Image (cartoon, rainbow, N blue to C red; front, side, top):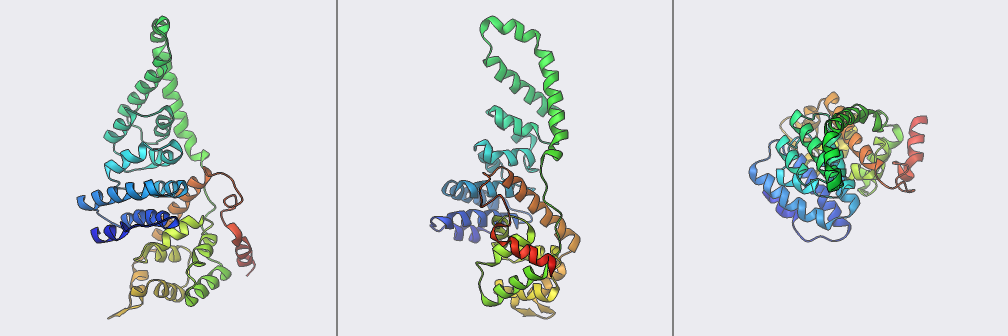
Length: 321
């Protein structure tokens, strides 16, 4: 893993820096059990590439990390210190942040960051008490010396009010998020285009078609293709119910090491045999939910109002095929 991180440390520019940031996150996601060295190398490279990347790439990278079961503690603290537009999804959803880390974050958290933490669905009693204390501190700073006695008399009432608000936020969280439509099997037109572009080596067009087939942003499809092992694309093809023959062909064309044969067949065939369709569908759905959640916060421009971009005609063609 260290060699892969060092490869990414080479100087990059412009759009390439965004791609390196997403590749860094993708490489870390592929580690089943990262070592201490992996965690340190990832943190160092993540911070460096994050600071050099665009705002959109930063949001996408943080949204991806919010799904990871393990994130280095220094990385979690670094993300927590970013503007709330970037940090909100991580503070609200990341399963990797320990109670101790959350309490440390709250010691210097802004009101907006504290509200993001309040929306977590697994708040412990200690966390609630800390949130109440933070709320009190923010309120107390706004109260003059003449009003301190009155503020103390109303303290218990405000604490109960805040506890009710936290519970209401937790209940409303699921209904507030706009989930994407359920993942549908790939259509004939999408499949034909992906196979054709893979055969012709037109790799720049594949992310566009794949994003349209997933009903997701092109950032998600590019991140899937950046996994050089081919496992994320294989997972996606299985989730989209692509026939094995076409999946093997596409994987072998995009990742030459998967075209090699061993005693039992090609490596692409062996990789597909390892994947369970139900598990693949569940994982791809989680990627799409994180992608949709991130896009809710983006400005509604012509480029992102329709996540399918200019490929909507392919989707409609697929339905009629």
